[in-house]
Image 1 (cartoon, rainbow, N blue to C red):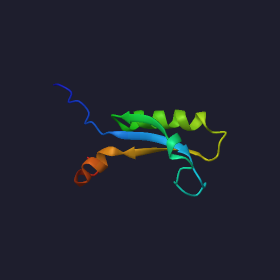
Image 2: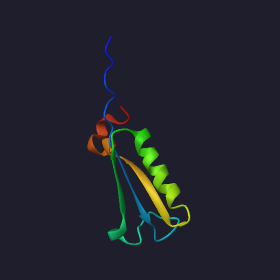
Image 3: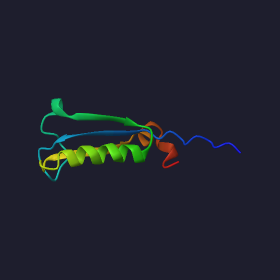
Image 4: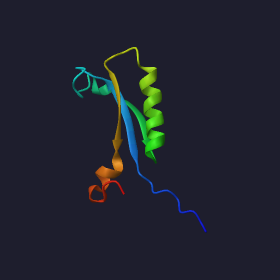
Length: 79
């Protein structure tokens, strides 16, 4: 029996300093940190966690994981 490769589910990790702790608007768009695009959620979370922990001293710094596969094909949802 052959193992089928896991389905590629792209995730985008990025972040930066926010204007307001309760919002998602960046203070300076030219300084947004593009961490990368990852082929699965677990790898994306690992990158997100690493960046988030590295900037823990700045309360305004936030990193996000975006499910690109949902944006590219919203009809497929979680599959």
